[in-house]
Length: 106
Image (tube, rainbow, N blue to C red; front, side, top):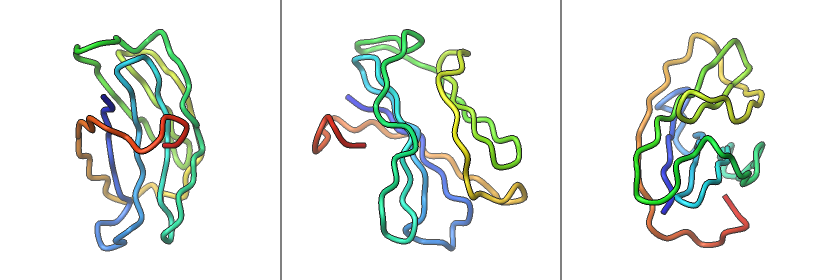
């Protein structure tokens, strides 16, 4: 099972969005789709901060200018740079994906 937190810097920019993902077996990743192409700044990475199995995890993304920090259950698990403009509105959507195409891809 994979939980995603998705956002877009501008809802009018259809097809451009970012995903912060965690899996039920303790992995997280950061992927984004830009101009129709997938980019994976953070590939699947194991973290002890993620509670495994059928349980609840608290996800948080903090933006400081163009720097993003990713948190699970209050622990920073990764960071990356983004092209999101600081004044852009971010819309978040949580979603559970039961199946994924490939465990080696985000």
